Length: 62
Image 1: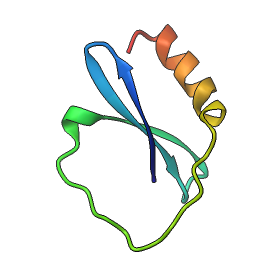
Image 2: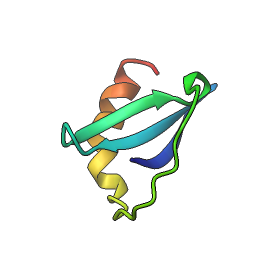
Image 3: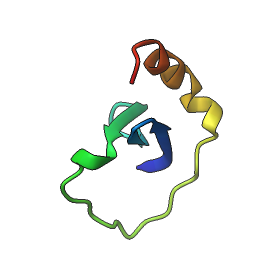
């Protein structure tokens, strides 16, 4: 489920929560070819749940 957009200049990333893996997933926004709208609600996870992944990604130079 998509939660946040992140700008790792010059590329935008979609931060999502994977219910199957119970973990964060990161997708390059310009590489998403299609998306489906689901007819269900979800609770937005706090950005702090994604901060560890963002910190690792910054070190790897997104």
